[in-house]
Length: 445
Image (cartoon, rainbow, N blue to C red):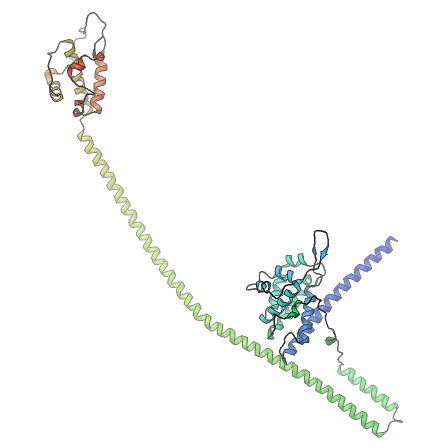
């Protein structure tokens, strides 16, 4: 039982694969026949919506684009039917100057099926149907996401479909996209009868004639001269009709070749005119590019020269600034007295004040600070500490010796070093000799 069920499963699988292959082959073959019929018909009449050949071709193309198209799964797990227009929007969006937005903005076309049919007619008028199909086939990921296994769009022969549709570029289509026929809800049905006509070969025709002669010879006894003449005339008419059919076929092929030749010649003339317009533009662009490159080179050289000149000017300015700073520093240094002279003046001032306090120096009232400085700078009033003997000390009422001179000298030295002689006129340093004498800081311990 297990082997039997396995065999039935394999047989069903093989039948399904065969059915899918036959369905794909039938649709592609009928599509080639339909394209050829359209080209033949365009040699005689204008192709529009009323042409049965065009109606059949649109039906075939819809069947090919809808073959094994995946449905849309809803929240409840049901699968709804999709139109091939949804796939065209996703796969053909990368085509340059596509008409998808124009189809979406049409007011009288609402359903997805109607939009798909309007798209087919519009791209046929633009002569870009093969370009759209080729672009969709190149986007294999999107095609794989929208179609099930075994679909024509996933088969290797789909590339032949795009090549077959190139022949439609020779036809000038004319459609009305505002008609109500686009909104039909019924699926397209293919009419196979125009492609099922049996055409006898020359060998089969000759064999049929021999068979008729054999039958005629077997029944010659019953045949009369009138019947023989009728049969001969019928044979002649049959041959003439066959020759007429052949002439018509040749005439159709000639017209088709002539139309294709005219189309190709027109395309060649168009391309030559475009080329003749592009060549001067290309030369002008090359000349402009050369001029731009030359001007760029000149500007670059000028900028390099300007940069070098600015660097030289900057170096000169830096050297001039350094020299100015050095001169300013030397000038300020020469204006101020040396530190040794300032220290000597400070020590002489402290010594004079101290002697006035202990009574060893004549009491003198200095009217101004300039007299004090002149008096302190005289050689007779300058105290030489080296000449004082080591045993001589200043004593006052038996108190301990206090080196107040060191502190006094340090304080006056700091004042003399930070302030000029003119600033000593203020009350901060020395208001009068009496205030200095009565200060408790100057009292020797």
